[in-house]
Length: 575
Image (cartoon, rainbow, N blue to C red):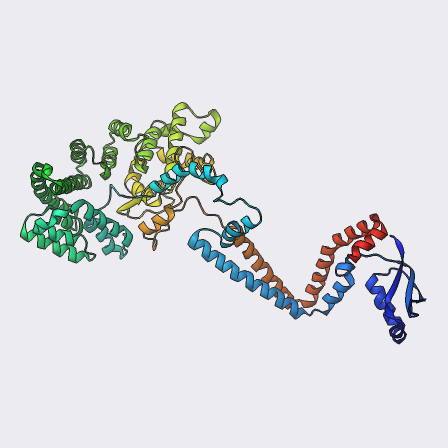
């Protein structure tokens, strides 16, 4: 350590005479004097006598920034109540932050602190602004992917939707639960108004009544309006409404649909002859076409539900041949399910070859049916132990790749097929790649997977391997477009969350700040409890912790003071 002559010229003699020893002690503590000093009087310019300490060891360390002795004195003056109040207040504040963060995360799916940091603090600290021109090319490059994600979040009519009166209402009567959400039923009402009404309905009294009936929210009011329309004339849409909502069995619904078919065919033939006479007749013909296709499709579904599967297959094939352009009803998915029931796998493959095209929108039915057909060729002899020893054959590799492709398209399906999650009645509308589509597919196709020996075992052994192939985070997909981020919100609107837990992919990990505030709240609460119970012991621990915390700083300051010249260090400390 350096030795220097230090003159203390800030205390006049008068003051020192009053308390010479006490003042020397104060000065010694202030300057960190490390050995017995030699004090003497020195004459100032004005003849003022002052104390001088010669040949003193001056060791400026943390004392200049809050000395260790001052810190010890400060800690000694604190009572245990202070520690209890400090830790209790910290625990309360961190607990409030934790509650707010958890609520914000559950509602918006992100951390509030992270969002504020990225949006406001990052630009201030020199981060790249997402809206800067440098990112314009990237934004334009991602525009196509964003548009694709938006289109994939479109809600579609479930091609295998159940009958509201004969199936959904019977479930409600038995369980007391509502299987359909208000949002789902509202979408169905919009579909009915789109398919079954047109601007010329006011020309026919029965159609005018049905136009109002489709807008009614009360089921009984709709049924009463349908009966009122039938009193005027045979109205196809009135029979449709009664078959869907009033019939309590599939047999009753089939009878009403047959009556609707008779009335619908007559309207279709008349409008077909007049469709070129003007836009009004063209809209009427388009409406009558939709009504006829809907009736024939529902009749085919009635035949399928009543066990007449071959008849249902014939009706569906005829319908697809007669109206090949009406793909919005997705009749080929009804046909695939019926063919699987007949175990006619060659025809299933032929349908897949036609509709599993890159230009057409995919569905879980297409992807998982293709996987089932390829799994069927190897599943009966597949053994994971044997495959790990000898490797996968070409056929097994094709089956595994098909399963990975299907799981990437809709990762929610395997849990329902493997019965890891309980099934509920499918909704009337589905979101492709979402939980609603997975429920609709598994509800009708689980039996087909069980019928193929070893298919579920192969699915169980391979489906989780898909997630090792998909980039994380999901900024881009592997075989399909990135998984859309809007599926959870739409599925919560479509599915009855009261008794069904919506499947979410990818699983949302808790943000760092929620975990941090939870740990901080727990730690400070434990400190407050321990300080309240053992005040003296916790005080010793606090002093030891602070001393240990400042020990490296003391060591560094001593090393710096020993290396730097005394004059330079003295000037720095004065500054």
